[in-house]
Amino acid sequence: MANLALISLCIFTIFVGFSLQGNALSSCNGPCRTLNDCSGQLICIGGKCKDDPDVGTNICGGGSTPSPPTSGDCKPAGSMTCNGETKPTYRCSPPVKSSTPAILTLNDFSEGGDGGAPSECDGKYHDNNERVVALSTGWYAGGSRCGKMIRITASNGRSTTAKVVDECDSMHGCDKEHAGQMPCDNNIVDGSAAVWNALGLNQDLGRVPVKWTMA
Image (cartoon, rainbow, N blue to C red):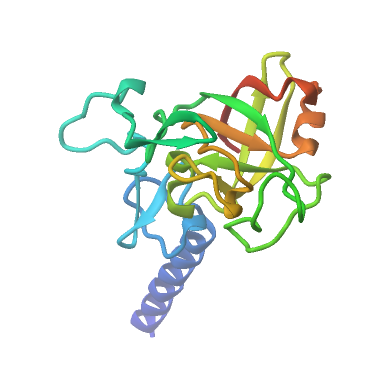
């Protein structure tokens, strides 16, 4: 009878352990099934939470610690000429840090707005009262940050959170899908009017330096 009680206790302990694990966010090399299973800026690769290779994070590290990437590691992939203006195109963005410098731009995510086509993450348009953003191609990381919240901090000290709903395409542009606009720079957080208002910024400026991190 004592052995039966001991076996029952072991089974219960294992069950509780798995339940708690399912409710917790996995850290480096922890088990995962979806992006939301991983903590912070980690992404789910092969069933384990790992650094995002597209943005150069080095949170987990490894057997040998690689040198941290610099902005110089993100080189142009080519160039595009549109309306007589030529600018570089990028597949990458500067490395993501605990507080990543960026340029905040203004975008209208509603139908008929600056964004052109519906947002890539959900195939929908978004009202200007929603705090939503598009990230440059490298930071968008193939959609791995879709639906996740980031925190943006302006130089005036104010900060706000916003949901990632789209890519600010650093590779393509000058077509109907991109509303005729040039490719984005590789360090852009393209925010809705609601984001600018929450930060207390003048929308007429169009471009302002900010810092962002995962919320």
